[in-house]
Length: 76
Image 1 (cartoon, rainbow, N blue to C red):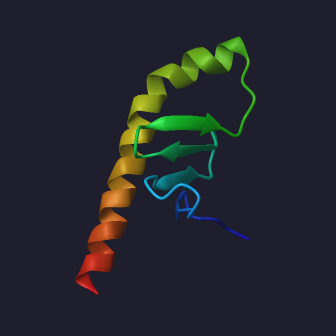
Image 2 (tube, rainbow, N blue to C red):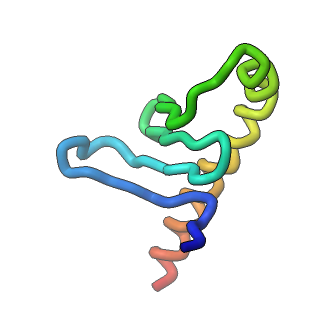
Image 3 (tube, helix red, strand yellow):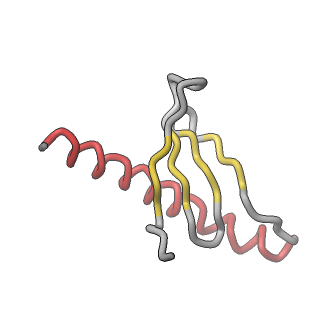
């Protein structure tokens, strides 16, 4: 099965949260309420250095994905 790069998620136990799941490396879940990130990967020191520079862009992409999806819902 091929998964999209980002998936929206919600949960009634967390009514204020909107989750975006990033399915490609580095896999993570971000709560857009407060930009808290939960990693689904284990990293070594070298990975952490490389990812620190990329994370701002990936989080920006996740937020843009959410905005795009919401605008599509509003159009329908």
